Structures are given as structure tokens and as C-alpha cells.
Image: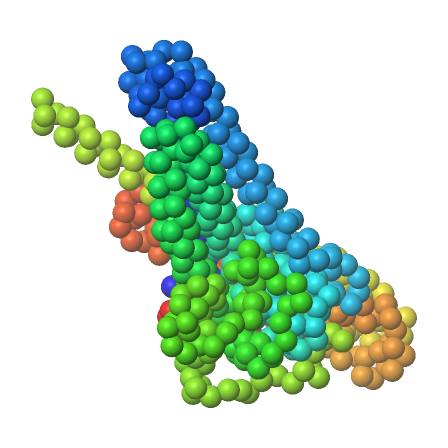
Length: 348
Length: 183
């Protein structure tokens, strides 16, 4: 898998992963929407009893009048959730950009940056992404956009200050890799899925408690399902999201090597990121998976807490990524350097 | 009856697989065409910049007419090329001709200081980089396309359409080897 065009296979796999995640979300939504409908039907038509928990065939036999009401709630719930997902999907990129306070990289001082972005887009065979900068001394970068046509690459001014053109090319190639591999679409879906599960679980618990006073059997079920969802589905979703994100960081590093035809640029850039201790001033856990280096500060990495922390990390340890790249270059995986000097930076 | 259903299902599945494989090959062929047009766009862009460059340099070094003629001839050859092999053959002369014209800046300090000249030089250099990356993508696409149409089932499927082999864009000077990547 050493040629640039072989990303297309990987892209297909990512598309498939997106479909699986979407299908999971919709299955979950369907179950929870049905439960919510059941509870609403339950306390609007108490005399219908147990049968109102189910909106299908059985209801029409036992309790004809509540069917239309149930249907309306079902449709409203589904429309509401679909609308939420669609809006979140469409606006996730601009939300991430405005959260990071990114501004368009216009002006002569960013011409070298725009140039490199264009080169990498050409090498990957995608439309040239929009380029943004964040005024932040912490060196970091991220890509957004649900598909290559709507993609954007954002870098911090700190990144431009410390990276040589060769290293910057490596970083941009890594971000371009995320775009070509459609990582952003998959990880955005994963984040939305986890969010939707959390919201629905909370709705379930609240509705359950609210109608619990009426000794409704459905209410008990709602509380149970809500709590189970919360205890199992939410952490599971977060773990899945983190694992998905970690795997894709390694893939994007591979893509960077393939696009630039040399592992030295991205390797040297990652080593500089590793040595750097500043963190992004406006970190957000919701968009942590987007950045080339995790923007969040982490606690100790020893013991159980450390192991759990690693499971929840959206990025593999930089040392692991660097070791792989050093091996490709034929350097000692545990060593560091050589690095380009910051004075060779094309920016100020 | 059961046997008939099984046969129908198997035939339908095979048909679907064939359609999928065929579409995959068409997509790759389109990607090759797209890759070629990307190279073409950048070569034309460079060709559009060269007359300006020649005019600018003439203002400072009017008597270096041999250098100007060489670069104009090489430029015209890149525009006239209409196949990857011809375009690749035209790359060597244009690279050395441009190298000579940029080298004039060392002999003429006023030229070196000219803002217009420096702007043109950086634009042309950037365009050359883009040509190199576009070529890389094109060659990767062609190799992938060839792998697909030379192996089964592609080798059978291509019989029912127009899927010729494509020329690689092979210039001998700047081709960089693909590093081996295993993750």
C-alpha cells in the first residue's frame, strides 16, 4: 500500500465504517423513540394499560384511540433527532472552526502555508481545502469538513513559528491525509453518535422519573433502559470514538509519508510537538480528536488510571508514532533528531 | 424450484459483483484522466508566466538573446506536448533553460533586486513544485489502474469497454522513490 492513490481503498473502508456507525445510531434512536412513545401513550391513556407500551399491531387491537397520538409522538421524536443530527453534521465544521477562533489565512505572511496546502492537495488529488489560522502559541493543527469538497485545514501561529517548511509540509500532508481518508466524516459521526446516546439516555431517565409517580410500568422500564444506556452505551461509545480516532492518526501519518515521499518531515515535526509543552488555550474535549496532537493536558500515565487514560485518549502516544516513522527512515526508534532548526522557518 | 431460486440468486450476485468491479475500473480510469488534466493545468500556468519573465529579464540583460530563445523554445515544446511521454520529454529542456535564466540574476544585481522578477521566480518555482506533485499523483493513479486491469477479474472486465493502458509521466531527473510504509 505504498502509493498515494491507494488511499481510495482506505477511504471506502472509512465510508463503510461511517455507515455502520450511522446504522447503530439509528437502531438506538429507534429503540429509545419507541420507549418514549410508550411512556407518553401510557399516561395519556391510562386505561389502555400495558398495551400502550407498544405502538404496533397490538395497540390497535386493545386501544385504538391512542394509536394516532403515539404515531405523532414517534414521528416528532424521529424528526427532532434526525434534524439534530443533520444540523450537527452540516455545521460541525464551522462550529469546530469558531470554537478554536480560527480566521482565514489571507495575506502575504501565509502565502507559503497556502502554497504547501495546495501542493499536498494536488499530490492527494483533492480540491484545495480552505486554510485557517488560530492565534495560539501552542503548535498544533487540525482538519475539518465532512468531505474533500468542504474541507479546511487549520494551523496555529505557534506551529508556523517552530516548523521548517519541510516539517510544515509533513504536518499539512498529515491533515490532508485525514481529508482524503474521510477520517473527519467518520469521527464526526462517532462524536454525534455518542452525543445522541447521552441525550436520549438522559431524556429516558427524566421521563421515567417524571411519570414514575403514576406507577406506570413503562416508566420503570424507561428508568432502567436510560440508566443502562448511560452506564454502558455512553462509555462504550466514547471508547469506540477514541479507538477510531487513534487508529486514524497512524493512518494519516502513513498518508503524510506517501504524499511527501519522505518520512523525515512529519517525523521531525512530531518530535518538535513532543518536546513542546504548551497546550492550546481553548481546548475542547468535543473536538480533541481533530488535532494532530491531543490539545488536552493529561494526568499521570502510571497504573490503572494511566491505562484507563490511554484507552480514552483520542491520540496514540507521540512516542509510538515517532518510533514507527523513525523505523521507516532507518533511524533508532528510541532516539530523537535530527530536527530542522526553527531558524529555517519560512515564517515569523 | 429451490434449485432455480439458488441459481437466480447466484447469477444476480455475480452480476452485482461484475457491475461493482466494472464501476471501480471506470472510477480509476477517470482518476487517471483527472490526474493528467491537473498536470496540464500547471504546465499551462507555467507557460503563461514565462513570457512575462522573459520581458522582465530583457529589461536588464537585453543581449542574452540565446538564453531567451532557448527558454521560449522549451516553453513552446511543453505547450505543444499532448501525451505524457511528450510532456515528460519537454520537462528536461524547460528545467535547464529556466535554471539558466534564473542564474542570470547572479550576474545582474539590478535584476536580482527587481521585485517583479522575484515575484515571477517564486511563482514559477511554486508551479514547478505543483507539477511534481501532480505528476506523482498521476503516476500513482496510472500504476493502480494498471494493477487493476492486468489482474483478475479486471483483465476480463476490460474486454467489454475501452480501457487502454496509459503512459506514465516519466522524467528521468526528479522522480523520487516511494518509501516503503507498513503500519
